[in-house]
Image (cartoon, rainbow, N blue to C red; front, side, top):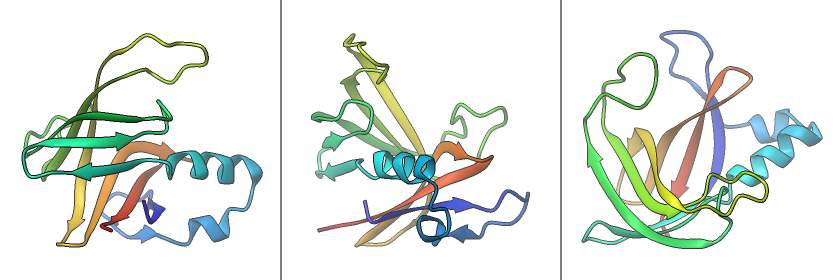
Length: 136
């Protein structure tokens, strides 16, 4: 992952603050951001992928799919292209090692042949979190 950003909290404003790592220097935010940036994914052409997530803190193999299903688990449907990652993992709670099928869903905010910008479904201070990933 290249960096994280926060979307504007205002409805209809799609601007992303990519400077948040420099602006919010609190220990709490910096620790949280560092944990989020652990996420990596290696996509293949056959829908299999290797992931490293902040929840499991280890490499795991799963599948990915791209679709336009508006359901992202929000209160209201969200139109657009979605990236869904499925893998066997844990919820990340301290001491919990129970494995179950996990699905991470992301709203694709931008994509080209070298970069991917995803809205994660998480928020920080009521602002949606966006990640910018680059290919190696």
